[in-house]
Image 1 (cartoon, rainbow, N blue to C red):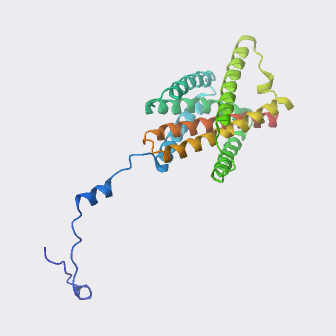
Image 2: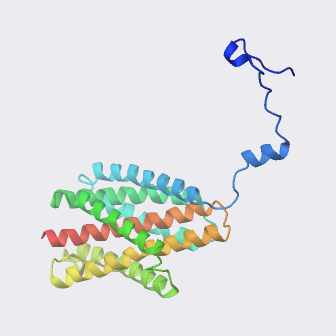
Image 3: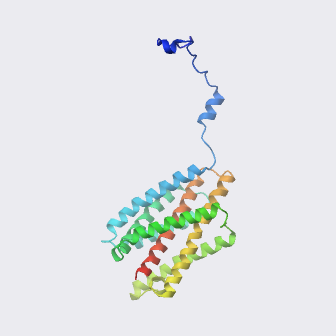
Length: 252
């Protein structure tokens, strides 16, 4: 092929040759996609799941006032899905997507209830949850907090305990119209309970960061980004709901 020359006198001097044809190896290396988990994979999947959570939250926010039972129904369905996802070694993305949407409906309906009772509490809870996430990330990056087997047992135990107490509280409300004081009452003991649970819930982020770091270091498959996003989603929702509960007690 002849040299490409310009008719412009300024550009005519010497012309220039076309770039050499790349070899098959160079093309493969240029377009090859990574086969193992990366930080970008985790970020993209997590943002996608949070977007789905937001869509479900908008639905729950709109219908939650006229159908208060939707929060209970969606919450129970999301709980079952989360247990199935947690117990399966091979994760199905469709289950994680369904969890994000249904959990969003429950969170949206609950948020509407709190916002109607305490105006402005939802933005405060979102801001508080975001600050906790940033503090936990900085604490993990600075190695001030590290995930340990004991921490994992404590966080898992408290999470299961809170879920069981919430279910018991729902049964008591349905049967007698009463409730568990330690969960709902704005007493010193009730506030202390919420502070302790919120502190333990915040440690869920440390466990998630540790899992993501280890998965990337060991070359886990890219599909593990779904599990990482699922864990971050659960941690964020848990902290957010506990923040709502604590702020509502303080507002009372």
